[in-house]
Each structure stands twice: as structure tokens, then as C-alpha cells.
Length: 252
Image (cartoon, rainbow, N blue to C red; front, top):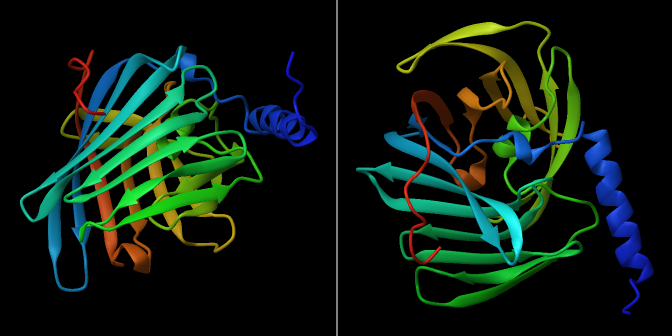
């Protein structure tokens, strides 16, 4: 029988502790569905209207139960973008990810101690990515928040890998002490306002309004985009929710 190294044991213990401290995000409470959003991005010299669609589908990934979270962005002004993330169904730890933006593609695989993959740039060049992890991470912040036991004044932190920058980010999650009713094209929704801030560079984050009913999906969000993403502001509002998604698309 193969023995685990001391580092592997420490990483597994750290993961368990992180799950406990984060309030036990539980992916088994999620359901298969499609949520569509209208997004407005205001840049210095341009306003972009984007349709964003997030689809959660139960799949089997490498012999284990998983969620496939597929996030699509469509706009008349930009190439179509698809971000597909595979998460373990129970604790939502990331397994692999595929990102396609125009002619640029990224493939990533996650282990307990690293993120490894390849980036194919628009000019055809190829670059390897190999980033060591010193703490457990979540694969998709919005999905992790949906699976947390949120309540007024609840707070926690989440670590996530940012593929665009090739770095880790630590997010501080803080639920407001009040609830708000948000009017959307899909109807009025009772929500918790949730601050999602960069725990290192305070103030660089977003405000989410998530459903008070579990799972706590995003209904509306407002954020300031970082310079590496063009700066400006982004507003997103829920427009529709539908049930079981379509069949697995090829090539994901």
C-alpha cells in the first residue's frame, strides 16, 4: 500500500479544516438548472451589453460524482466566451477547467497541492502553467457561496485560483444583517446582500445579492473591474431560471 507523504497529509488536514471553518459548503444541496443574467459593463470609452448563462449539470468526472458548471458569455461586441469548471459534487473542490475566449484557450487540472495546465494564446503560442497551492481552494466562488449556510452577519473566507493572472486570491465573504427584495425580469426575489472583497487588497471586490433560500444563488451583482480586466464597472441582474439543462456539449 502506498503511503501518503507528510505534505499530502497536511494538505488533507488543511482542506478538512478549511471546509469546517467555511461553514461546510455542501454541493449536494445544489440542483441542475440554468440561470441567465443581463450584464452591463461600463468601460472608460465603451458600454458592453452581455448575456451571461450559468448551467449546473450532474456528471461523472474521473470516476466520481461531480458538478459541471458552465458559464457562457455572449455579446455583439465580443467573442463568445465559455468557462467550464468540474467540481467534486460533495465538497465542490475543483477537478479540472476549460476556458475558451475567442482564439485563446486554457486547460487546467487541479490537485491538492498545485494547479497545472496549458494556455494557448491568440497568436498561436503555448505556455505551461504550474502554480503551487499552500491552501485549499474553491473552483467557482459563486457556486461555493450558493452552497454555504448563509445567514445575517455570517462571514468566512474563500481561496480561489485566478486563471487570467495565474495567481491565488483570498476572498472575504460577509453577509449583511438585513434582507432586500430585488425586482428582476424573473420576478421579485428576497435576498441577502453579500460583500465579496479581496481579503488582501481591501475594497477590490463586489456586492452580491443572493437568494435567502438555499442554495443561495446570485440574483444581482455590482463590481468594479480590476485594471487587468479593463477597469470600469459591471452590473449583473437575473433574467430567467430554468430546470434541467441540455445534454453534455462536446469538447468540454
